[in-house]
Amino acid sequence: DLVRSRGLGDVYKRQIKDTLAAEIENAIVTVEDERLDAWGLAATYSTTFTEISSPLAIVLPATNLNLRIAADGFNSQVVVIDNTETSREIQLELADGYYRLKGTVAAFGFDFGSEAPDIAIELANGNTTSPDTTVFENGVLTFNWMSEIEIASPQSITLTHSGAEAQTITLDESLGTEVIEAQLLPVKVEEAPDNGDSGTDTGTDNGSGSSGGGNAAWLLITAIALLRRKRLKVKRA
Image (cartoon, rainbow, N blue to C red; front, side, top):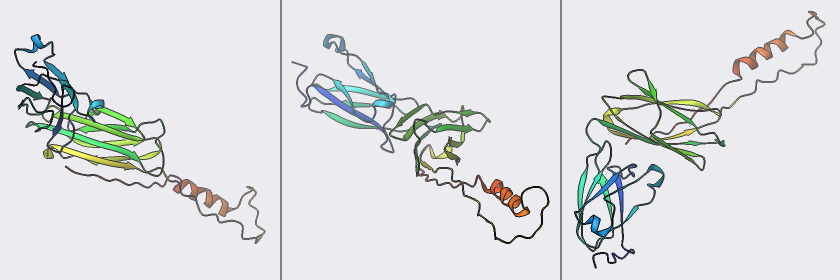
């Protein structure tokens, strides 16, 4: 009679978020009860980055239970659920000495195609690293990165794609958590003005088969062939 309905088919749902109400990946939920073996239930459950858009569903007896919620870089928390509770949203605070970076990279005015943007995080020691997790879906790259500041202190992040100009954003580890929303614009090549032919024959022939004006036009094309534009939207936490 312990396993009775909680109103959702004996399923208890919980969603773990940080203080910015963003879901936390790789969180561990531990059910602290000596009767688990008798009930035939596992003691621990975990989330993954690709599954955090939906709450984690756990089958639990309809009785009061203690759940310990933990995640790397966050302060753990113990919550008590009663026999009538069917769901709860739990918020964990970032632990001291940690930094978390979340963000999205989208294309504006062009399509990434099958090529996901590259992300490089520059550290204070001169090294670079990549996000812990990335998901490239529907033309948008979502990424997450967390570090212990003493081990890996972030300085900036660079976003690149073969069809867009590289974007570099300065990071501020003192904020604890930063959220970046970036849009990459396509490389735009502007054509050189067409000087054309005035129709006037100067009668001068230098033997090269082309006029001095023509040479100047080629030089101008070379000088401006790679003019680019960029746009960036950054939201600080």
